[in-house]
View: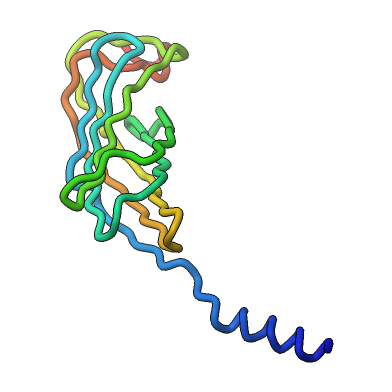
Length: 140
């Protein structure tokens, strides 16, 4: 009996496949601020499968961690996952004026019915009018 259980366990382990992981670059990345404490991120991710059920994402501004989020059942059309989260913050000062920011986004999309994980990333320099200030003492 013990040998049969061990054989069954070994067979199950041998046939179990690890999740397939795919990496893609985002096809569109935009960031805008409507004023102190408010903004919107727009990210388009090409997906070669059905719509994912869950997406976790992270945003960095000029290398500083800025925002994280989780979207359940995000919009999906024509093979493109469209993330459009509104951003809100209260812990950073605001800097008026036009400036360039390097916006980086990274994330993972997963499916309930599939073992795959889709990793995505993108980076773009954007021109904004007003932006969060990460170090109020170090910036003029």
